[in-house]
Amino acid sequence: MKPIFDQLRKSVSKLVKKITITEFSPKSIHNVSIQLKDILIQNEVAVKTADAVCNKLEEKLLKTEHTRFSNTKSLVFATLREVMLEILEPPQEINFNQMLEDAKKKKDPFIIAFFGVNGVGKTLSIAKIGKYLLDRGYSCVFAAADTYRAGSIHQLQKHGENLGIRVIAQTYGSDAAAVTFDAINHAVTKNIDVVLIDTAGRIETNSNLMNELQKICKIAEPDLNVFVGDALTGNSLISQVLLFNEKVGINASILNKMDADVKGGAAVSITHMSQRPILFIGTGQKYTDIQAFVPAEITDNIVPSN
Image (cartoon, rainbow, N blue to C red; front, side, top):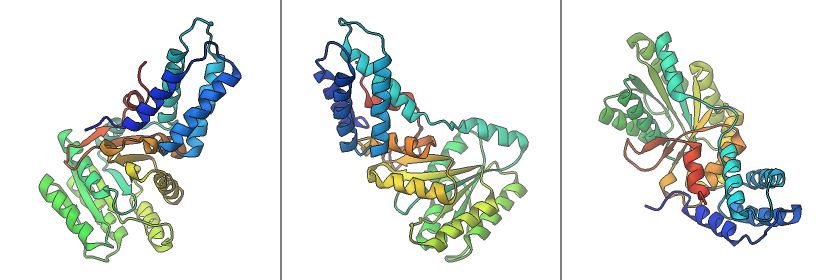
C-alpha cells in the first residue's frame, strides 16, 4: 500500500526542491505560493483552504529571520509543515477517551450519533468504534435508526452479532427517533456505557429526512455528533460536512478510505472548512482498520521533513 497522500507529498516535495531563490522577498515568496496553491487544488484541497495555506505560508516566511546564506528549501519545508499542522488542528479539539472516561464516572450513557450520506461506510465505522470501545473496557449498544433501508438494519445487526453488541431495532419504516429513544432507555436500564446511533444517509433535497435527523438529535441529545465521510469523494465531501453541520451541528468527523487517498485534499480541507477535528481515519474493511487522527503524523505524510 502506498503511503497516504502519496501524490500530494511528491508534488509538494518536487516544488520545494525546485526552489532556487537565495533570498526571500515578497515577490519570490509569492511565486512559490502561487505554485503551491495550484498543487493543492490539483490534489482536491478546497480553494478556500488552499488560499488559507498559502496566505499563512507567505505571512510566516516574510517574518522569518534569514540571511542570504540560509537554506531556503529547509526554511520553506519547516514553515509549510508548521502551516499544515495549524490547518489540521482546528480550534475545537476533542479528547474522545477523556470524554468517555468522564461519562463512565458519572454513570451516564455516552451518546454518539453518526451522520453521512449513503455509501461512505457509516455503518462499518460504527462497528469499528464499537470494537474500539470493547477493547477499552466499555460496554455499548447500537441503535438501528436508519429505518429507511431494511438492508442497513440487517447490516448493523450482523455487525452487532459479530462483535457481541446488542442492536436495538424496529421494523423497516418505523420511527427512527423512537428507535433511538428505546436504545437510550436500554442503556440506562442495563448500565451500558455508550450508545451508538446509526442514521439514514441524507441528501440535501430531502427536507423530510433532514427534519428527522433533527428530531433524533432532540430526543437523544448526543454528546457527540460525528460526520462520516469518504476521503475519495474530494470536494463534495466539504459540501456534505457543511450541510450536516448546518442542520444538526457536527462535533467531529471520521474519514474513511484514507488508505486509498493519494491526493489528501479531503483531510486537509475538512478540518479547515468545518473547524471541527477528525477523530478517526478508516484504513480498511476490518473492525480494527481504524486509527486515531494525529495531525502531526498526517503532516509528516504531506510535507517531507527535508
